[in-house]
Amino acid sequence: MEADNKSNCPICTSCLQEKNSRFLPCNSHHKVCLQCLNHLAKFIRVGYEFCCPICQTSIIWPEKGVSSFKGSLRNGKLIKEHESYNYRHEEDGINDCFTKDFKEGLSRELISIREDEVKELDKLENQVNDIISIIKKERNILKDELETFYANKKMKIKQLIEKAEIFSSYPKLERFKNEDEVLEWKIKQMKTKLLKARKETLGEKAFFKPVFSKDTLEIGRILSPYSDQPTYEYSTLFKGFICQSLSSPNDKHYALVASGNTDRLYDVESGEKLIKFNAKVTSASLDNNDHLYIMIKCESDEFSIGKINTKSKKIEWFYVQDKITIYFIETDWIKNNICFIENNNFWIYDDRDKTLKYRQFNQTICDFKVSKENIYILFHDKTIECLETSTGLVRNYDIETGNKDFSIRLDIINKLVKGSVLLSNSTGIYVVSPKTDTAIFYRHERIFNYGRILSYSLTNTEIIFSIRTYLSMEKLILAHYKL
Image 1 (cartoon, rainbow, N blue to C red):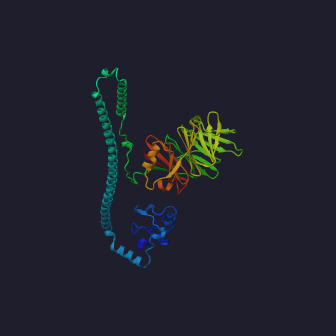
Image 2: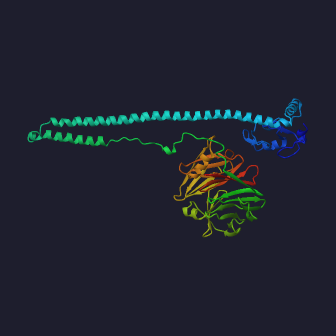
C-alpha cells in the first residue's frame, strides 16, 4: 500500500494521497485524480472514447460520467480486495502474470474477431444474394417483354406472307383489262396496303437498354475507422483566438489570429508571423496567386484594402471611398478579383482599378466558395444559394442530413475530388453537389471530435482540412489525406 500512497496523477502529476482519486476500468492500478476526470467530463460525450494516460487503452466514457468510476480503495472491502491483489502479485511474479493475461486476452479477441468476420461476410453474401434474386426477377420480366415483342413481329410477317399468296390465285390482268377495271383497281390497293404493312412491321424495333453503369454499381461499403484517419496531422499553437483560416489550392495555409485589439496573420505550417495590425480586420482573402488581402472597415464607413507580400512581409494599402452597389455578379469580376464577406454583404475588390463593389443579402453570410463560374453562399439561417455569374440566376439548394454511418473518404473527400464544394458554419459542414442541387449536412463532432473545420485545400495528391480545436481556440490542426 505504501507504493500506492506515493503515486501521482498521470495527468496533472499531483500526489494522489492528497487528492480524491478514481480508478480506471482498464487496470486496477491505474487511477487519476477526481479533478482531472471532472475536467475531461466537460469535453467528452457519453459513448466517446478516451485513452488511459498510463497504458493508452481505449475506454468508453460511461453514461453516468465521473460517478461511474470506482473511488479510492481506502474503504472496507475494497481495501481488502486491493491488499489481496497486491499480496498475490508480488513484484517477482508480475511479468509472468502480465504475459499470461495478455496472451489469454488476445486469444479471446481472436475468437471474437473471427466471429465478427463470419458475421460481416454473411451480411455481404446475403446482400449479394438478395440483389441477384432481384436481378433475376427483373431479367425474367424483361425477357418476357422481348420474347412477346418478337413473337408478335414474326406472326405479323407470316400473316403478310399468307396475304401475298392470294395474288397467285388471280388470273392475269390482261384478260380483264377491258372487262373489269374495278378488279384491277382493288388488286393495286391490296398491294399498296401489303407494301405499307411490310414497311411498318419491319421497322418495328425492340432493344435492351441498361439503366445503370457497371462501373458505378455499388452494392455496399466497407466502413473502417482506420481508413478515415488522416495520413498525418500537423498542429500549430497561436497566441490568440483563431478568427479565420485561409487555404489555397497550392497547399498554402494562413491563419488570422486576434489578441485584444491586435490582429495578426500567420503562416500555419511554419508558425511564422507575417504581419501585425493594430486594428480589427473585417475579412481576409486569397487570390489565385496566393496573395493575401485584408479588408478593414474605417470609422468613416470607408474601407482600407491591404495586399500582403508573404515573402517580404510587406503590405501595400489602398483606401476605397466609393462603394458600388450591384444586384448581380458578372463572371469577369470573379475571375480577376478578390472576394470578402462582412455581415450580410458580399464584397468584390478589383485590384486593377481599385474599386469596391458589393451585393447586400437579407441574411448574414457564414461562408462562401467560388468554383468555376459559380459562387456558393451559406447563410446564417442554414440555407445555401448558388449565384450563376454567367446567367445571373440564383439557385437554392435542398439540404439533407448525412447518414449516421458515413465515411470521411467516401462521403466527403471523394465528392470534393469530383467537383463538390464544402461550406462550414459553427455547427457543421455542408457538402454541396453542383450536379444534383443538393447539399448534405454533417455535424463537426461526427467528423473530427476534437474540432471544427474552418477551411480546406485540394491538390493533385492530397486534401488538407484546417481544423480549430475545441479545447483551445488558439490551436489549429492541418489534417492531411493522401488521395
